[in-house]
View 1 (cartoon, rainbow, N blue to C red):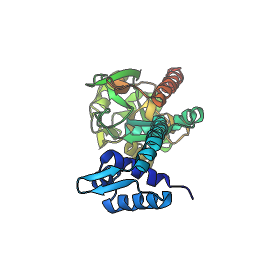
View 2: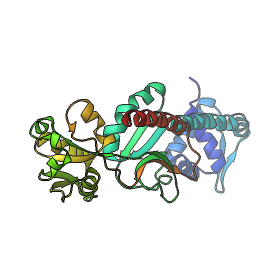
View 3: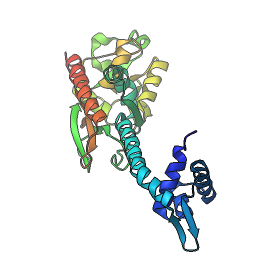
Length: 299
């Protein structure tokens, strides 16, 4: 049997600490564990490595010879392990974004990103708050707003378009040939955070009436579920949130008129942090996906 690496590492830590107690603190083990490792190593070598005295530990001739041989080697091993760990951390992408955007727009497209970069692992946190990304160890976020967030660089992605949608069954009960005015008396689902958006859409559609706001929701995913479950409601939903629902026929768009709310989607990331390789790869892929989406949406 050869001397264990654990025993040699304990020996080096003890020499540098000049104390079993301090070595134990450095290694996050008990003093007894350090003493045991040193005793095993001395037993294996057949020599004493330390001379114990009331004033502390002193290396023997054999101890000095061993330390000169293995001290730098242990340092090189630690450096190599740290380099691998850093490289592994660099292959992780931590992203924060809105719940509905992640579920409806980002995740269906991330399959292509994963195909291109199979070694990058994604950690996706969802929520409405704009966190201090640097302190939270987050590479980037996708947010909706005016593009002004302290400490963050914001890159414009696209504006949102709000469109009226409903369940296919409800479409059959409406006289769409009469135009948007058919929505005057319809129960409308709205966004609790921005209840004025239906009014903005009515103005854009030329409807001279106040919208009949029925049920309000603060989460777009809940709103979509409510629209699918209640075939007598109409909702005003962002096109990037609704495109898969329309494509797969779960909901239908009622009219071409769209309202454009203030703000847009932005990619945000800390200004005072060096960007990681996974972020660079994600950013390049993201703006390709954005360009494709906008081109398809606006045709």
